[in-house]
Image (cartoon, rainbow over all chains, first blue to last red):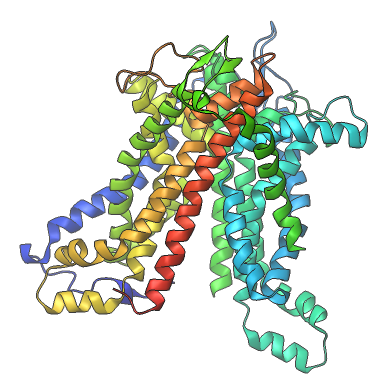
Length: 302
Length: 268
């Protein structure tokens, strides 16, 4: 909660040109454009998605198990795409979360100062690499590694996507987890050590649980970013729209579907609206994840 | 343990450098593609990315700075402020492909801009708006209160204080935020796929209503659809893209470190 002390002070209710009130209104108006933009995005997603349900049953969309937009028997079932996104995201979480918490613990509790100074810019650079470059790397290099390491027919599968997405989520998770750990009062650690616990025991049983909600928020935000990733998964997950939970299978995510199919879809067609419906679903999911993470961050502060 | 986290960075950069460096030459950077995209250079893509960066900055920087200054200097504790903050946070979380959809439905179709630099710039500008707002707000908050008090004590209005004291003081932070926004724009593919980008254009864009080629989109199509493309070309494209982005990020990091040092020393 920021205190008001940083604001330019001044009586709020007194009118008068000498207060520079017009400027305040202009700035407020420009700031509210963010709100307007969010509303517009929501509106237009809905506007272009709803026409789907005039000609295609909503149940068929949300519970449909096949996504076949261009066959003779056209089907717009979301489930295979949903599970595709889910499998890749969960896989990425399984890889990234232990790694991120481990690195955060190491950096905030154990490592010397210079490691932190080195890690921070490195994490920023990692986060700056565009997703299309990650996708390129996965397509050309990682797929071959996976193929030879596991004896697969093709290295373009959910695992490829999960590994790359884990790397992409790492900076967010590490940075925020580290912030959460540093926010734990030193008195907690001191008390634990004074009672005879070792440093490792203190880290695992006192510090880490105390930072629980901050770390949970970090994980959620990382996963939220991962769910929304498009180019990387488009290039490496194989793009077979099938319902599967095996990491070695080829899957297709919601994001990749929209990106891949929009280019060849006629404007205003049923397919077009179906893709917008996916977009709306994506918007709702990431909105929910971010809202949840926000709630957790607030809990941490109190 | 920390090395494990650094490993991907080293591996990817190493791979790009090793494979892509041989492809970089003056011709590569200044000529267009040839032979059905299998050889030649990336000049039009560089131009397109540059145009999109400039266009989106023209949108994001003024709006973002205004928003950030409002949040830092004027916003009260009421509902309006909370709504704005919520909106900024959520805008930051929207997936890039959803921005692309919105850009398509709103700018390209409804406002009839067509697939163009204009539509792409507006879409990308929206995408990075939260970055500029957040950077500006943080930079403005870092200006010491004593400066504000001194200005007001001399009789300046709040706006005059903001314009003459806060804004110049926040300039380095705003610059950093702009650089970060720019490097984000340079690398985004999904938002421009349906709003601005084309794979092969015979001419450079002549007006804001023309489509453009762009580096990340170029890399994407080279990787997935062009058969028998020279792998050096792809690596070279990737290297140039990553190189530009990392360079601008490094500049931003250095700027920020210098700012911190200056402020630690006692401010302006």
